[in-house]
Image (tube, rainbow, N blue to C red; front, side, top):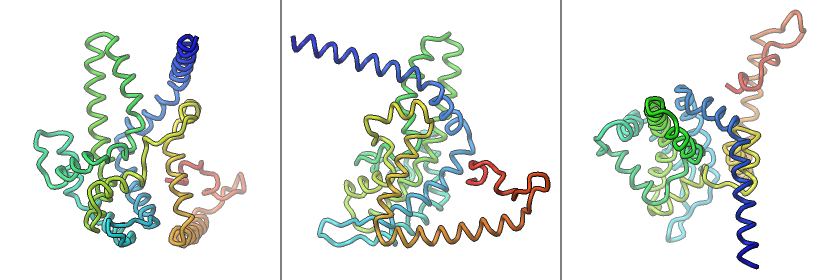
Length: 273
């Protein structure tokens, strides 16, 4: 009886998974096209990633093995400096595109991944989708399948190179502060872990393409705002953004026909950019 009930439960779960996979196909395809297939997204996301994770790092209470507190502010500043080093991006691209993987940062990237640093890249959230896509491609015609596989590899390598910069920079900065490899990798991953998702995430992702990064970023923001450092910096950003909005609104002027400021007439996505 127990075996029968177990089999029925498994069948229900499998049916639910298949249904969610089919239902979420349009949103997954849109998210993939809007981010991974857009070559400029990785460049913009790199800048945003470094800024966002460095802000989260400033609010972390990190300790060394002897109990000494890590200077998170100093680590965040060092992280930004490392991410701005052209050699880091050069090594990340070489790590993906060439057989020469012996660069300084490539070696540190392998160390970071060896100690659990995987899952911190934006493109990681598409890993399950990529596996399904490959199986679908292989069932298509050989010529079309080969072309799609080649494009898929190019897209993955391009995005993976840019996605690796922010997390690796955080890892190196924390190692320079004296943290062990395991602790530095865990702390860097914790700044933005795209593999961490609740049971309801598959359902939410089916209707909202960017649910995973929104929830992950939101959770980190709430965590940061519980600290005095996070509250102080958030207040500073709010004042700065309010000033910039007022300045741009005064420069853009009003739309004569609608009687509204031109900045307010822009959609949210354009204003955020």
